[in-house]
Length: 65
Image 1 (spheres, rainbow, N blue to C red):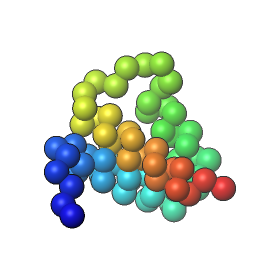
Image 2: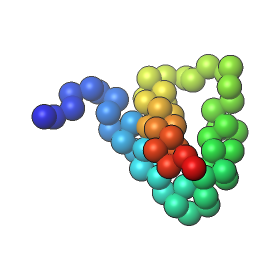
Image 3: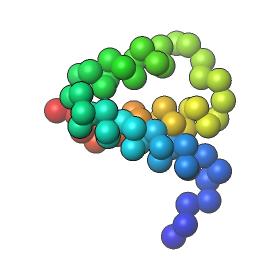
Image 4: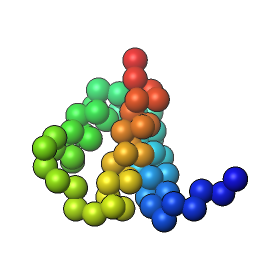
């Protein structure tokens, strides 16, 4: 099945970036980087950026210790 969500490419890029960061710098540093880039309570600018953040977050949760 093909994913037809227009923001799926952004989600996948975020997921890949998160997976690479966890592999390269470790889970804690990648989590801290995510929290600095996406400050809790601060709005995200657009749907593409939101999809990227969700992908990165999913990569973090997939690799949580």
